[in-house]
Amino acid sequence: MHSQVVVLGGGPGGYAAAFMAADLGMEVAIVEADPRLGGTCLLRGCIPSKALLHVAKVISEAGDMADWGIEFDKPKIDVDKVRARKEKIIETLSDGLASLAVRRNVKRIHARGVFVDSNTLELEGGNPETYESKRLTFDHCILATGSVPAMPKAFDIGSPRVFDSTGALALADIPGSLLVVGGGYIGLEMGTFYAELGANVSVVELTDGLLPGADRDLVKPLIKRVHERFLGIHTGTKVVGLKDVGECVEVEFEGPEHNGVHKYDRVLISIGRRPVSGGFGLENTKVTVNERGFVETDDQQRTSDPSILAIGDVAGEPMLAHKAAVEGKVAAEVLAGEPAAFDVQAMPAVVFTDPEIAWAGLTAEEAKQQGRAVNIAQYPWQASGRAMANGRTDGLTKWIIEPETERVLGCGIVGNGAGELISEAVLAIEMGCHIRDIAESIHPHPTLSETIAFAGEVHLGTATEVYRPKRK
Image (cartoon, rainbow, N blue to C red; front, top):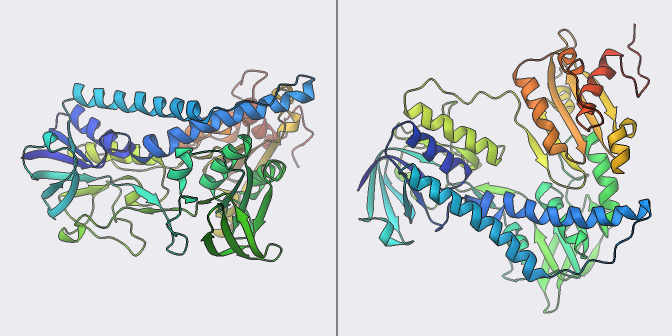
């Protein structure tokens, strides 16, 4: 059995690569161990988590209406129905991808692919009816095997009460108490959901702050909110032991303020993800894997093996679905002989907490590390009429600007809907816009999108709702 192009992995990068390659006239097969397309993002990551966060948002907003004199009864939560609704969303989207594969004549092979050499995969398990023989040869393979949650051996105690993000999204129940180990975006998103459903959520983070690496100005409003919603936030604290004692998990801590043993109904281990680059024969190819487990690629997604390209999480950070999709299309275009390359100035990142945090391009911290002079312009949402009307003024819009040219280099937003707002900044950075281009583009009033222009006006000294005259 032979295919011109084989895509190993059916996630956002994999199916984007396969569909693009098919659209460009190539014969394509996707080899995926799961019977459904979609990968981690659709099946047990981005989509189900956002579905559950929508539930949390509705509950949170209903509670916030008390300030308007409108009070709702405590919500009655049917966990089975919430879980079923989530699964229905996954099923609908996955079925849609399967239909698109058929329409594009992309062959789907439900199996685990193991490299025999640089041009051959051994097919194992899955559904043998989807493949004619156990060996699949190819001219080129696009590696899209993704990543999995990191689970240190010390935390992997074989208890159903201790789970990773996949287990958290399975929504077995609403625990009375939940400890989130790791103050990164996945842990905070899941903590937000469970807290709104009624769990007493605590977070422990080894470093000195939540969302390490993110802009501190953007993180501050989130920290304030989670302190109101969560039972405890313990930074600079280490988990030194876990023990399932039957009805709960005993967790031992070492930290400046949080020590000793404490009990929790469930524990979510959320300390990052690791690339899936081992266990399927890559050593039988010429592909180079670095010390962190990432496959090394160039800007055309080519590896050190002429027959194999790599995209998505397995090809390096940031581990984002939208990055994988773009890389997948680049890889397909490269195989079609087109002059494509992954050349991105502004990779957006969004933390779907409450409030949301989003950023793209250069951050203030990165500029400082590079010794690069920048101007920073900030617009507080306390001055936004729409934010005031929404009852959520805990936001901020921030531009990073090149002093000599006034070209925008980066943008950060924290607040309700920040993830929807950041795309304008991505476009502006990619197009090399100057801050005046943004500030003098008329934004509709009253909207939160105005804050993007108003932050530009702060830099120019022309802001109306705040007094920030330009220095002479």
